[in-house]
Length: 303
Image (cartoon, rainbow, N blue to C red; front, top):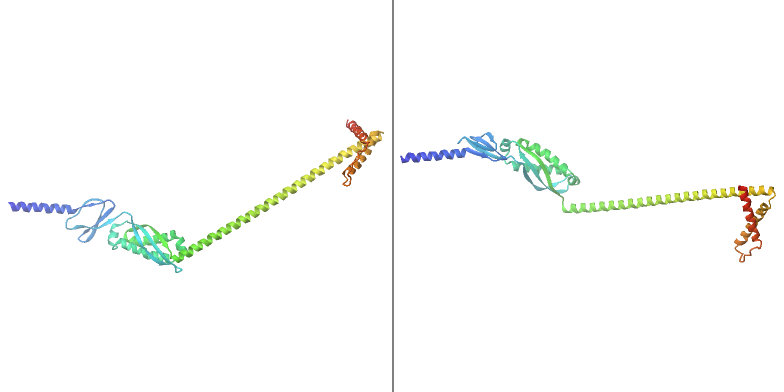
């Protein structure tokens, strides 16, 4: 009886062990391949699954999340024979776990080496200046080639980025000198352009000032001519009025012409540079009376 109990207990334990081994729990973000007698039969999704004991087993555990693979740095010779150190990172995601598990051995290692060879190919087909200035183009070309190559492996390459492109130290120094020379050249050009613009603005200002001065002189000449014309017209009207008064026998009109000549002669005498002493004529009072009489004459003529 004791042997039967022991045998029964052992059988129960074996059954429990088989049940526990046949139960598979797949975590989120992972998928497992199932092999029956060494041959792929199914893919397990996240959750609980019971396998057939002794026949089925988990073959590969495939990470379905997007992953980052570092591409080691390497020395690459460009098209113009310059040495450049380049490294990169590649972002991949498994789409088909069966292909990722059985179509390639060591998926990450295969993708890493594929990136290394294609970085050499793409960078080596470009000049140094193009390599340093067209990083986005390099990334796009690498992505197209590598994504196409990994398609049979059930893997999608979502992004590839060049992390660093480092030319040798001597080339870096030469590039720094070139950039410094370019900056100095641009500074000299900007300075020359500024001086040119300043000279142009100065010339424009002088031109406008000259135009304004000419316009001012023309306006002044026009006003002087107009004043002289009005003075001549006034003089003509006065002469006509005096002539009419003379024709009528008015003595004040005759005295007007005499007084006018008298005043002009006296003005010349007073303004002479050789004249040091000025003698005022005694008849100046009568001259003032004559002018006053002439004013009465003009008032009478206006009325």
